[in-house]
Image (cartoon, rainbow, N blue to C red; front, side, top):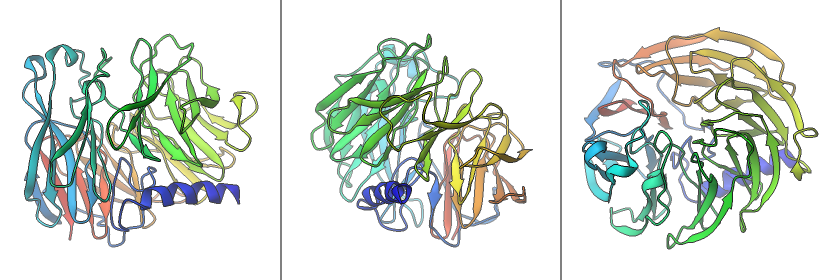
Length: 409
């Protein structure tokens, strides 16, 4: 019953800000890549089952978020070396028309030089609520807008020297906007006042990992913030930021995948260099529970970048090189592993019993969720993409290098 309460609390907290058909933050309403949408398309390509395709100015790998028939995303216009401008965009979900384009920040050239080739100045995904849009540009700043595109506040006092640029998206909980700032020196978890942008608390990462930079997105569940970083994953108090528990995983660094939860356990990947997947029991976790609360570990095929997804009794994850693993999430027993085409950075989404895996060349492999591997479709659009898809009733949205696409109705 406790596991049900955990999941129910998470869904209720996010649903308060979004309608049933919405996709309000990174990985959707629950933050776990799961959609209750119906009529989601199974097949498409660059010319078939395309409702619309719209050019997006600049460059960015933030994923689209959707609320009340509007799509929101961020982009960077201009060259990073000379100082680009960072923007928030709103589009009409019906036809892709750009409704507004607001410049948020000018990116200082000194904060944009150490960019990984798979990163961008606009990689973190926004959060949309009933009346606010929160946009985050990592080490360069954060802002809140109303849904007409007017800037309400900006927070730029927390700038720092990044490693490989920005990456992780924020999470919203109890009037706080929480994000990880896991840079190479003095990594920390930060909470801003969602109403004003003021810093509410900062919690240093007490980690022994030699490489301290990571890019994960926190997950909110059962009144706590679960946030992976280099060398450890921790549970943090919402009000104070105090670490409540931790599990260590050695020298794991550059952690990207967002955690997922089921049946009272949280599932994480240690990312680079050799990722392991761990199932951590949350009940009674306090202090360092590395030796007492890890129920199982999978040492092969873990993801460096893409988050995992859970359906029923099974957990699925894809390695950067395209190996999908399906395991029983209660036991860690691996049921199957299969290779699909391409390399993977985008996180998979689950809808109507199907899982959509989108590779870096813009090809989506759709499989049937279950204990036996079954491919339903392979859909190519011929444009690179690192952003994760968004799903609503009747449609799936994919951001490619130059465009935003709506497939389906």
